[in-house]
Length: 258
Image (tube, rainbow, N blue to C red; front, side):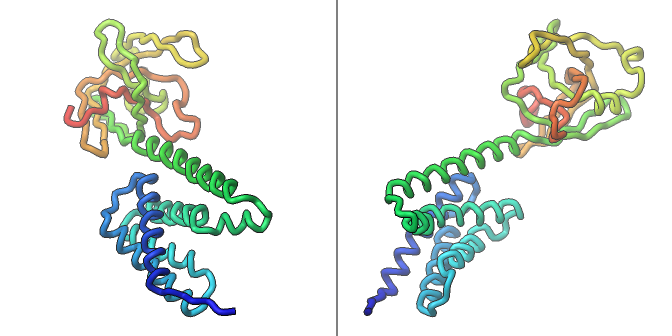
């Protein structure tokens, strides 16, 4: 049996397909990568694939994808590199023929493979978007009252509309444990407190103790927010079951330059 292999056509095909897969990966993961770096990664991958095919070595497609990803995501953080490589390989499996070849072994039609590939990529994209949104919402918060400071993790909740009823000032919520470390023992007797009404899922209504501290600093990706004399509501328990955060910030407390 005789086959003709056109190296130039094979290289250009993988250069184009590789660039499209890389661009899709970068877009779905919302990473910042220039088109020049994406093209360089695609060119390295296409050259590697072409050379490996000519040498008759197995695994040429995935080796080429890994080399492409290494060029594109070089210099990024560990999480971005591993996440980018993993998603790029997923796209390669879905649209590079590997998934369809597997389906062909079971006699399934082309449409089934296409729908399954799109479903996998769509699901992975939604998961990545939710994870990134959560990471962007988690910030470092430093609370100060008199000579004490407390540093913890806060979640910016755009749906938080909690206000102090008398003045209408925005209210952020903090776990009782870090609040007690900041305020000290028997702080209610020394400083006093006021009650803040709230509504939550599963609770018709309730009250939380409120207190005004000296200042709060919120470290944001786009700057720093410094709030003088913010109002905090103390939650008796843990706001996050996995202790990923100990505060729920009012969005007005997370405006840079404030």
